Length: 571
Image (cartoon, rainbow, N blue to C red; front, side, top):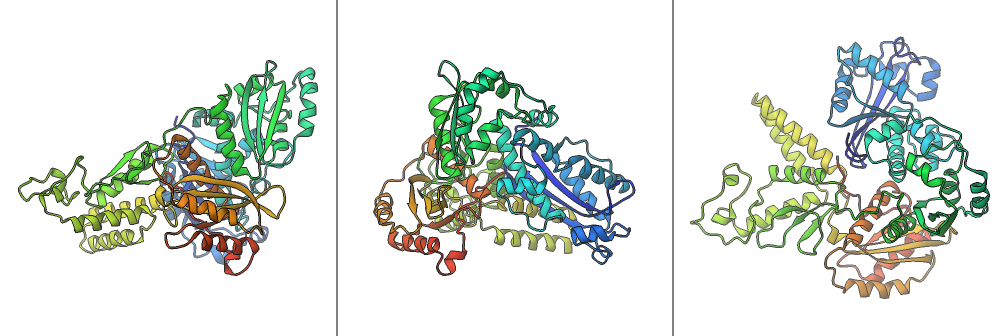
């Protein structure tokens, strides 16, 4: 079984004419595909049920008989769902998995399709075992708990999107419980909910600490009787998170259950925001190496794509940031980086060979030239200017601008179809689909680490008048400080002048880990922050003035959340 983040989760929601999968039919279906920790693909369609849509269903969903009478047939929609479920390492996911799977299974069989034998995951079961027992676990309650907005509630596309985002949060929680593989996760969802009974003497010792826990973000540490740290965790609300370990209805991974019985002291550090709690948690785990932590204990090497700084740059996959060349990423795992690199190799003509090139007409081009995968600048068949233009096109793509390439491939696909070359057309259609998936999660502005320059402000949990300010320069966290919304920010102008002139250099393992934590948090909390990019032609004072204008709620900027970066993820 793959790791939690290497699986392909097909998050599905259906709207139906009733509750019996044999007697009733699907009227709308949506699948949201999650790979590598990010949403990669969406499939959504109304379906003609050839049945009457009852008034109560129309009232609940807004889907009436007039909407579905001309909708696609079941036989047209379900093969698309089958393709998603037959992907490598696919897992079927739904909030009430039994209900949705039975309808999908019956619909596939009616279309003459044998349902794929895929593992199935229920986010409702997961939530009951991972989250505090005292809260409701329906879709609306979980969305509120995680701060996820549901658009078009009780519509398949809205509910599937929300379920996918809830799944990502639950996977984070599962990893913190020590669950590392899909197999462990599938087993955990069926773990029996037991009434945990800790020894009274343990509860008596811990109760004063549990009662004193604040309702703020922060990091907590659990210690045994000898004073050794057992476990470190982060919380959006410390009181809820820590107490959940000791509530009878919460299921825990076996090793965490074992750890809880050893706890004799709990300490915590409050933080202004959830993001600063995430960063502090990673620091504390690396510093203290608690025996019951899995996440962050080992230094993880995230892969990058790098355009080298040679006269004729190459695109290569690396696992360390040494400051030379332009880096794109970091990617969550090697497979995603390799897939994007292969796609670029297929559509661009950058050289593959290592070493320095000295163009010479007498040089013999390698076989990549004959495969039309390289322009052969070594043999002077491609000029330095032409090669530089090709590099710029690759850079443009890695910055998230793929529309031109998609359009080019689509034109070639249509031309091949008109010439009845259906094999080539099908190949090009596949490339268009894969490119759209891959670049669908690239940054709106730039995936280049060297261009990750911004000032970000997040409202603190303490009071509405304060924000936590983060400044990133070249992917490095340069400033982290709490300030008032109406602060003059003169201190920040001076700091920006200093960091702007500093040598950017390489990123340490901690810099890369922090960048992954921050960009992932930004991706999941798009409305939870404002960010202002640090431009080459914008002075620090102009940047601060714009930030002040946004925080003060004046002008058009007040309505805009500037989303500077979306991490490239496995799609």
